[in-house]
Length: 193
Image (tube, rainbow, N blue to C red; front, side, top):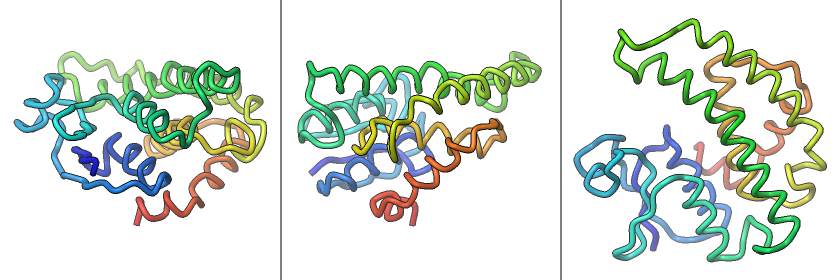
C-alpha cells in the first residue's frame, strides 16, 4: 500500500487523485509542509512524499509519472509520440502556469515580508492570461490528450483551480469548460468530498 504524506490543500491531492483514478490502495498521512517528519523524508520540507516500502519519492510530478508508468495507467507508453506530447504538455503547465502561481505565492506569504514584491503579481497575471490563450488550442478533445485522461489533466486541473482561487483571470472560455469537465470525474469528486 502506498503512503502519501501531505495534506489535501497541497500537491499531495494530485497524488491522491491519481491513486483514486487508478483504483490503487493508499493511506494519506496528514503532515504539514516543513514538519519535522516531512523534513526528515524530504530535506526541502515540501510535500507530497510518497512512501513505497522503504523507498521515498518526492515531487508531485515525479510521483505522478512514476505511478502512471508503473501501473500503465493515465499515461501513454514511453518512447511514443503521444507520450512525448503528454510530457510536453506537463512541462508547459509547470513552466508557464505552475511557476507563475508559485511565484505569486512566494510574494504573498512565503518570503519574508521585506523580500516580497507585491507589484510582481501584475506581470504574473498578464503572463498567465497570455499562456492560457496559448494552451486552449492545444486541447483536442475532452482532455488535453484528446479522448484519454492522463496525468497531464491532473496537473492542469491543479493549476487552473489554483489560478481561479487567487484570481488569476483569463479570457478563455474553453479552459473554463475543460476545467468543469475534468472536475466531474468520479475520482476527483471522491478526493474533493
